[in-house]
Image 1 (cartoon, one colour):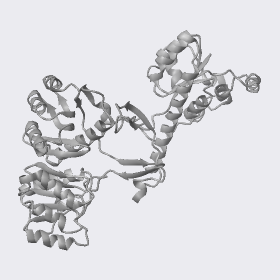
Image 2 (cartoon, rainbow, N blue to C red; image 1 turned 180 degrees about the horizontal axis):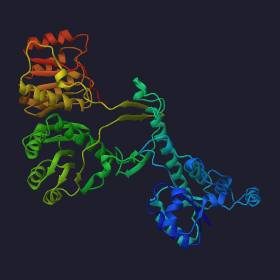
Image 3 (cartoon, helix red, strand yellow; image 1 turned 90 degrees about the horizontal axis):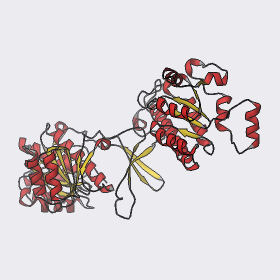
Image 4 (cartoon, one colour; image 1 turned 90 degrees about the vertical axis):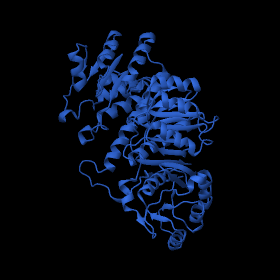
Length: 513
């Protein structure tokens, strides 16, 4: 048997090569791989010796040669192929060990690998006869199988080939994305092309198989961009059953909202309780225990079976308060003390306890339906409060400003049509996912109850008529923020002045579907 080794990532290379050497497999290597093996005293032949051609063009041409690719691509079941090998003095290659230049980490023309993808694809195409390894994580299993059986099974070669094509697909996708950003000398895209390029190449790798999908009869998994990592990859699960599709979806919404609220408030303690991706309660407080108690009090009924997000550490005191409340499916926090974990596990062993790093910013949103996809950039709150326009005779007070900001942030992260009422740093009424804005306002005021008196409210889109505003002012709301932009804006402004309330317009809508 003969193996060709040409890798950028040399993790585990020497140990794997020594294992192959002990099995009597002839090794050939090129470039830095050959240098690495020579330094370790691993016997091998240089590719240039096999091809009788020196490396050229600063290493751009070394493996692109019939002596290499003939040995990889020959179909051993076809007599004419074997005759060609004999006629041209080519020895078959049975294993190709190759991973590609790290284009993702340092994009440049020089890191666009040519010989590597060519070898990988050739070996993967001929997987009936050739095994191709593209990751150091494959070394141990392959070596064990070779030691035990003397060859790789068809199933193993098939699995390796699939991984190889995925590897090259991801690599090519990253190069296309680089060109879409202008590359090294290209024009920087403008307008829509800067966000939604003409083609979008996403190679996703499965990170986890979740407990089930949206419903128990559905199969679900978490994927990430191949070669990349997300904050979810650094989450530690301290207790509880396996995560489901909705656990991940809702926990992500909760964790992002908590960080946004805290950032808006200069790092103050923030807590959010999420149910079906919408807040049942969200609050700022003097402490995380204070913020949790306020968020829970906003809607304790909906909090049952929800996601609790704590923007800091959960200690024993806070754990006891959480444990005394409604059952949570997931509790996600920056960290847990050992005593807090023990307290929460004693309350309910199935609750998932997750400690997580700060989430990275969102970039593109991709939603598939049928054979199509809708793509957009992430919805950021670009209109800063300092740019909001007060359109009523009354002006907001400092206390009203604080509640306006919380109501607006939570409303932007609530399913449309959405109305959110906030008071004293707490989202006390959330009307989510309604076909009518008036109905959403009615739900929000009903949940807020007497806390709507003197409260702030936010609407994710303009009021098409004054009736939605009337539903809020009749409940006692005294300040409202909304995007504006309706043909009847003046009618709504007049209604606000008639009710003696403050109203601001952001000029920015935040629908969420």
